[in-house]
Every structure is written in structure tokens, then in C-alpha cells.
Length: 228
Image (tube, rainbow, N blue to C red):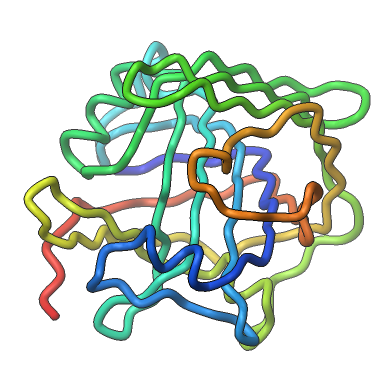
């Protein structure tokens, strides 16, 4: 698949490693940076969602999305583990659950440019979840930069696969490809954020680290079983 990601906010908190490990499949290794695990909330808007070589359908290809993630490895390959993903497109939600075995949920969502930045809201409406809510205004500040290898920014963003698990227990890896992230420092004001409550992970009220990216074009491959 090919898709474009617009106006991403990376909001990150350091969290105790033991609180994260208990939520992961046994075959995944939790990645730490300077001895700390990290959890992220990433709101953005998707466009151009399509099978490679096929045209994007207007009614299907553009919608807001929101994910809650941490950082893991399997068989030595670093990637992303999603605790949840919310999307405003119910067809995309069911397809991702079926094909990628990801924990997608339907949500009422809105993202628009305002005088203070991107005005973003999401409230989960899927019966398979709760009523998790995010309301935030965010934007960029400062110049673009690419994260240097060995930095925390590189650890959090430069990952080129995702992991998922089938109901039967098989661990899956989905490869992705894109150019290095063009990041900026970010500002964000959260009016509501209950995205982490169901995980029972203790965090500070405000994110420790904020980054913004205006656009990322990517391609993804169908997941395959991880052999460990």
C-alpha cells in the first residue's frame, strides 16, 4: 500500500519499562533508550491511501488517524508496536483489522488548520473499545532537521516496520519504507487526553518531548510471520 501522512504530532512520555513489558507479546523485546521505555501518541491525517499502482478513491483515501505506540524489536529488527489506532474511516478500520491484525477502532475525528496550529479532536465510538478522547492544538516551531543516529529522536522516529499479533498467537512484521523524517520541534496544548488510561501506565500530565512533521510519503507491505 501507499499513503501520505500530513501534520503529524509526535508526543512522547518516558515510562517505567515494567509497565510496558506486561502489555507486549512475549516474543517482542521492549526497546529502551538510556534505560527508559517510551510511549507515544501520534495524531495526523492520511491521504492517498491506495494499493500501489492503483488510483486513490476520494471517499476512502483521506481521513484523520491517531495511534498510541511503543518501541520494540524482534529477531534484532527494531519496529513499532501499536497499543491502539483510531481512524475516522470505518472501512479502513475493518480492513486493517482483517489484513494487518492491528487494534484499529472507529472514532469521530476532526483535524483542521486554525490560528494556533492544527486543531485536532478524536472520540472513540467503536464498541470494541472505550470512549478514549484526544483534544489538542499543535504546530511546528523551529527549523527542519533529520534525526542523527544515536539520538533519542532517531530512536523514536526512524523505524521501518510494525509488529502485530494474530488472535492465534503468531507474531507478524509489516515492512514500511519512507524517506528519513523531516522533523521540527513542536508546541501542543492538550484540552483532553484519555488515550493512555486503559493501559494503566503512569505518565506526567504533559509530554516530555514534542515533534512535528509536515508530510511523509510511505509505502507498506503485507505483514509476514516473524521467525524467531
